[in-house]
Length: 335
Length: 227
Image 1 (tube, rainbow over the protein chains, first blue to last red):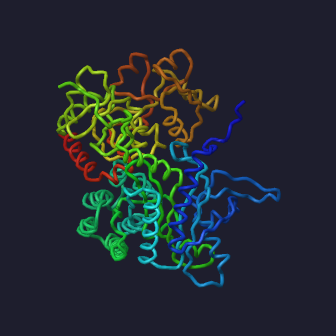
Image 2: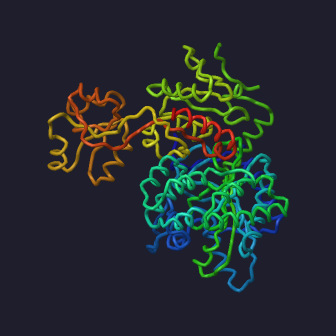
Image 3: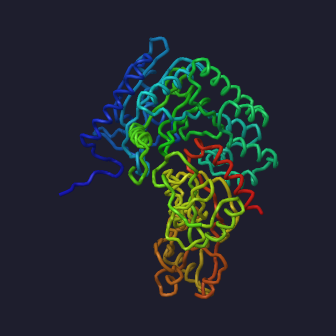
């Protein structure tokens, strides 16, 4: 008789578990090699505490009451719990803090390949160092981690979370109209974006074309030149931030796999400045993400700049398996 | 030219030419015309081959039902795809980038009821809810929710026009091109929900990692669609 388990969860049997543990070991080795110490936090937190980190999107899929009637939630990522941990446990200690984790998290996603409601994140948080040094260090660790698990072809997208918020503010678009446009940009619905910009007041044909073409700029450092020619104070500032990060990455020899992407927007509300997304050519899904969250720690009472990334372990596993197949030159016909 | 299956096309994402999902059905002919103008080879697609994978000179063309296009593109099994906005609206939870409005295949998603019959309004007023038959349950639910009305959405697979005629539903939500099918069944448009045309969509990772190829094909299709 088969007893069901909740949608988006699954059992892991020995063959898969052995490979996952091997992945975890390699990732942890890469993280600790850069001086990051592993931490663990409770799977359940007070809902109120998680919402303090990101009121807009941290809404957990799983919420329930404990025996005292307090509202608890399963964490949806590790960044907010670690921000809470650092603000609370390291009160008297001077930064920087270098922490890493391999932990389960929970989100109400539509279950599909490599994307479950219960999933494992492996990542680091660097708390204390400013941009661009802090961001560059995080990218360096990420690069080492990807190499350690055999994803030599993986690409790290680097964008700026404030670019469109500021560019739209510069055009006098705020409130609901701005949020709606940002949503279209995040979904990369270019047709919807065009339509909505046509309806928005005070935006000329030229500015509309600028915003749309800006979101399509992605590639090497030449992208920064192209963006500069587009102009605008908000664009200038974002370009300066990206250039700073990119220069620092080059200085560290870690810019090779970085793709500058002005169309990048992450849907978590706590990001500011640099944002990251990680892709592998063997799989169609994003395998990880991250960025700067300079304002998050202050919401827990300790004002410190910070950056980090997390990899989705199960998706990394899928990518690794696909990469091995590509390496062997196998096609679907089974060469 | 004999259409042949393309080596490697069945692996998820090996290196090689871009894979473009081409919709069979009502969008098929217009899509082929646009692909021709964009300089792709559509001879294989035009033949009566049972194959579903064709070499389109530099781009691998894969044919499928329009409603499957978002599934293949989201998973990255196809890098790009062409499908109707109606499909994208119905499957709005699929993560695909919508790059281009190709302009053809224009039709309207509408709420329709029986000609000269006040059943829709009466059901809402007296019974507090309308029964709506549709092949697009999510579009229908979202539309009535946004306009503040309570409905019972009944999903059907076949000819939806039948439902109000024999009393399964008070009205229908359906895609209308010329309106002839509606008229033949004594139905009339009551409200327009959305205008739908063919769209070019892209896989998120392909859009990043195959940027040059994706941008090039997008530009060619844009020019071809405008002509």
